[in-house]
Length: 309
Image: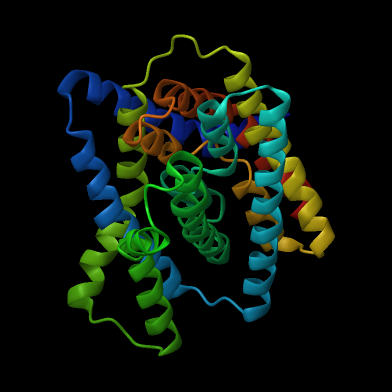
């Protein structure tokens, strides 16, 4: 119990503090949330991703393990959410939002900060989380979009949107310079490090500001509660089965299990709002799962330490 409380107060509580700071600042100053979000997406996150990939060596065997996990885990989440939506008797729009809330995980401005705190001495753990962010973005702009808009965008347009993401370019450039063993001049490296170091705080304050705009009302309905349970409890349980099935262990297994426990992505709410599909339900699901995740993520981190060291 003492170790569990230590994890909460040293890893999860600091994240919660920054979320609350963001919410308070937003209530007082009414930030331009779109501008803040773009600052994170186009500046802080790419810098953090680039520096992490540039400094970390990942073997092909680890990449193969992560790829195998992603295919099985995300595939199982898609299937499970589809059948649970049918069992709940949801209509087409409700089903789309419900499925996205389970499959689309907040791997970016929730997941990476958690990984940076948990794996402060093990950079490969953060690098794995970065890879998962890329795959989550791919899932968002393929499966997530398909659920909501089906025929309103062509496959080519979706690919173009994905390739415009700066995190993809940061990942690619980081891999190239890492493999080439290229030393970045200090004139560029120092400001790059400053921006990367600021990512955790800015991303979480921004997320807190965004969550503060969501309404607390009517969150306790069967769809939101079921979604939260599937995302935060069933998701990690399935991830653990996949990890054992693939024979993954050590820091890779620990990173993948923790990554499976993060709350619903705010992208699921953004997409629902953009295409006017049950946007209130989507937003409330994001807020509720983020609040509850403070408890469940703590437990999953604790279990990952017990199981994989």
